[in-house]
Length: 415
Ligand SMILES: Nc1ncnc2c1ncn2[C@@H]1O[C@H](COP(=O)(O)OP(=O)(O)OP(=O)(O)O)[C@@H](O)[C@H]1O
Ligand SMILES: [Mg+2]
Image (cartoon, rainbow, N blue to C red; front, side, top):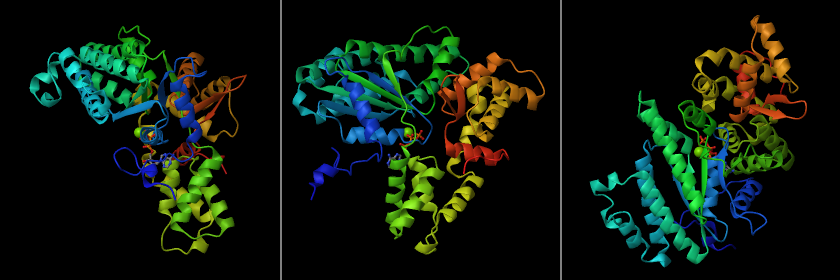
């Protein structure tokens, strides 16, 4: 039997497992570590569809770090200022260092370097006025020295960092320049920390694409490339075999199905929701508890899935509602038409086919360059995938595609 501590994280809680993500998580660690081993590792920026399982992957990494790495993780979505972010990071660092008692003396050193504010004074109001840039650079500078002495590396995981940047910009309201300046300065400071501190690594995640934030910054005069030292990565859905295994795990927890039936139903569930763990679990949990195991069939599962989509459960409307915000009101019609076409067309299509089709249905000329720009954005936002030579596009998520077709009265070519 396994030792109970092997199933618990450092807080004594059950470890959070990201089923089916082993290969992706290994890739993340190897990127941080650097390969071949003597090369420097890279920090990472993860962006993918909402609910795909990003946070769960990070939780798994936090609970089960690779030897030689320590992890400090925080969801920063609720923060709306760079100074508050820096203070939270400082607090997290103190907690981290206190847990890691081997580095006695660090707190005092940082306290002195930061102008006399120490752990016992964290709540005093003056603390708020330490400027973000100075606080972050001092904190990480000292932390880096300590890590170097022990030859360990720290991964700072900031979940929903793009949302934090958006909050910063929004907080300034009409003074857009101020907001842009504050967000840009924070990104530049974090980049400087990565350059200066060879034992500090960062992972940023978010379902809002950072390209939207950077475009906003650039439109307002920012010239930096604050992520060009980071590796962009996207987990995507599970591979079908892993999705099926996860569905079978959930199904067998709830039902006693024959082996054959379990196999077929698990495949139907995973396939139906595009192999995304959150929806796999959601669909299995919707199977009514008052029907007998023998009446759980692939047809029944398809019917329940169709009902959930028809009711717009799982908040899939989000993928349509955010279009004006992401692409501008003036492009809503065009984006909707492009997605309609991708959703109902069986095979991948070229950009020219998209333009021709829109011109046919909209009965007006659309500029190919605008479609080109929008296709880039739709790919970056994970609505579409781009493949091959000649370049073709198709809808990325089969679940969102089904929902899109249903909601727009289109015939979905998916089985
Ligand atoms: N690999 C997995 N194994 C088991 N369950 C998972 C896995 N991935 C996700 N889940 C389940 O799906 C839920 C949603 O996943 P998660 O919060 O990681 O998505 P997300 O991509 O961070 O979403 P958001 O963009 O909304 O922040 C988790 O709380 C968990 O219940
Ligand atoms: Mg998340």
